Amino acid sequence: MKPSRFVPPTEVPGLAARRIAADIIDGVLHKRRTLDDQLEGAAQHPALKSLSDRDRALMRRLVATVLRRRGTLAYLLSRLLDRGVPSDAPRAQSALMIGAAQILWMDVPDHAAVDLSVRLVQADRRAAKYAGLVNAVLRRCAREGIPLIDESTDEMIDLPPWLATRWIKAYGEDTARAMARAIGHEPPLDLTVKSDSENWATRLHGETLPTGTVRTLLHGSVTMLPGFSEGAWWVQDAAAALPARLFGDIAGKPVADLCAAPGGKTAQLAQAGAKVTAVDRSAGRLARLKENFARLGLEATYVAADATEWEAGPFDAILLDAPCMATGTIRRHPDVAWLKNEADLDALSALQARLLRKSVTLLKPGGTLVYCTCSLEPEEGEQAIAALLEAEPQMKRRPVEASELAGLSELISPMGDVRTLPCHLQHDDPKLSGLDGFYAARLVKT
Image (tube, rainbow, N blue to C red; front, side, top):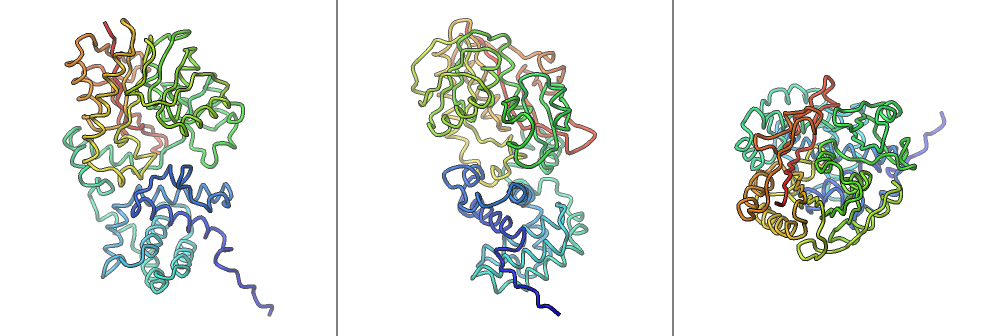
């Protein structure tokens, strides 16, 4: 019998993707590094470029699933481990979570999930002694995991307790639970198309939402999808596409987009024919916005500046997409739940107030200001606008009509502002349901 060739761990198919996923999960949970920074930013994982598109997509899904289901995984492992998760070997912790996530929620054979998690710990000096433990626990997870999860009736288990408490207070317990359920699902891919949305929905095997966004379940590298290279569309959650549409006809008008990067809303303004000035304090993020505009064939003026100190205008319209807690984006950016905390609110609220006051000075009389945040926290939405209206009598709210949002009246608050929730826009297929949480108010300077 011919002896089998030994395959080093680094050559085992799929192991590199799982090792990088473990590193990135550790970066979020223990080093407080954002996913964006580790995937594309200054702290990008050095081995990412070596992954195939398929393995890169697998790695991203592993990371997102673990972070999205962190509370459930912690509960499950507490039931399967008599002495708790090993605290002296982070790689053992991440290997257990990655293995369990694959067994419970991903289309990965149980034996592969177990074997590759064991290899992860064997390759780590501090974690190697736990290889037997990881093997036993994950095999037990394959047998007992789903029944154990079904025992837990806490729908808020995958949210930090402070955030769950806030959402219950702001939206009521039933709505907060519906939001938590929605966040638990992997979101679809949303695209804003330049034109002919029905055609692109067909070509991308998706469907056109009432608001005009094309939604598809395609996964993998977006750069390989039809229409990317010719600049026919850009990635943008359906909720994020709403604020820029509240200006109406802006063709030929000077419009400032403050805090413009990453540029989805800026692209909408330019596509609508506005003379857009894109302002962002990060020169690096602005450079990436400019590169994307080159692909899209759109034009804008680019200004790297702190918007609170920028002097220009006046403008007919201003879009202020203010820095915020970003809790409305947890379904797409699950790291947000574990990187932000309630103490961050005060500083962000103060910054939003400064940006709002500055926006008023940059706006022409009769001009329109649209303020928005991807936050579900009232301090960064309704309360911020209430404070501005009290301090600036010349600013008046111009309520949004349901007809402006394709008749979706559930997206409009009693005050006439846009308020989308993760549980909105339900579909027969849960995978096609949901929106990011967004707030947007439209104000006019009298």
